[in-house]
Amino acid sequence: MKMILSSVMYEKFQHFIYSSLGLYFPVNKKYLLENSLNTRLAAVQCDSFEDYFLYLQFDAKRIQEQVELANCLTTNETFFFRDQVQIDCLRLYVIPELLKFGQYRQSLRIWSAGCSTGEEAYTLAIMLEEYVPDCRDWQIDIIGTDINEEVLRKARIGQYDDYAIRNIPAPLLKKYFTVSDGHYEVRNTIKQRVTFSKLNLFDSRQMRTMQDVDLLLCRNVLIYFDAPGRRQIISGFHHALRANSAFMIGFSETLSQVKNEFRPIRWDRTMVYYKEEMSFAS
Ligand SMILES: C[S@@+](CC[C@H](N)C(=O)[O-])C[C@H]1O[C@@H](n2cnc3c(N)ncnc32)[C@H](O)[C@@H]1O
Image 1: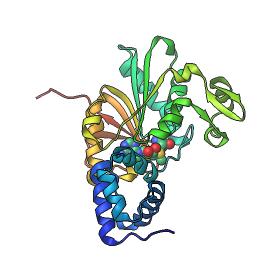
Image 2 (image 1 turned 60 degrees about the vertical axis):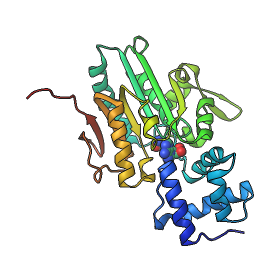
Image 3 (image 1 turned 90 degrees about the vertical axis):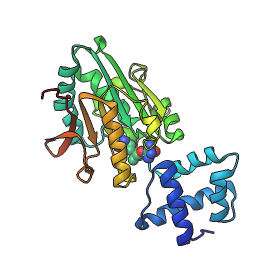
Image 4 (image 1 turned 135 degrees about the vertical axis):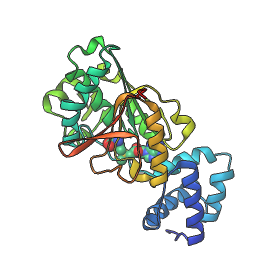
């Protein structure tokens, strides 16, 4: 039977989840929190929200349970070549610009933050393989990170169903995937360019491990955070990015409420944010 979350317990969970995971559940999303908590209560056989609150903080399995709860609270919707305008923008504008800035190094470091099951990171790997003329001469590293270990496990396997691959142009599907038992598997040439690791975007210590990034995609993730949370994460991104690097958020997302140090460029109906080179001119 589904239990109803009292206002007192809602506030306690809201505070705990915000301070430990950075995930923000305003009153109009209380029902989402309540649903996820009910699922976890049943899974760990707690009889009340009060018991579960103690379990989350003091049980020997609390760390594992906090991860399970985070998995339950976030949605993992994603697919290859998501949002055509942004894909065109990457192909026609962002990637050519990056090649200009990176050509003396012949290296690129790309980060898909909140990568879910890996489709976005593999899309970038496929695009670079296709659109960087002498790709084999470049050192290209693509890093996919997420808070959810289960999606990262799937990302490393790299097997997808019809839904995930529906936007991939047919020639690219043929070139970069093998098909068996009704699923599509990313070929090793692409897999070897991508690594996946766990990273909580709200954890400043973990964020500091990311450096020298040339292109960062954090799409459809910032929606989980309130304005101070977004500000903290974006400041971590700013630190992780090199000068002249590019940053993109989701097509329907905005950075307008968050004061930031990026130069926004409009391309068709989407935005790219550039970290400017530091000026030492007086
Ligand atoms: C809707 S998916 C977006 C996937 C992909 N970026 C895309 O746009 O197709 C959101 C992802 O953000 C992840 N996420 C949510 N909160 C996070 C956090 N604090 N740190 C890292 N990842 C987080 C979720 O686990 C989920 O996989």
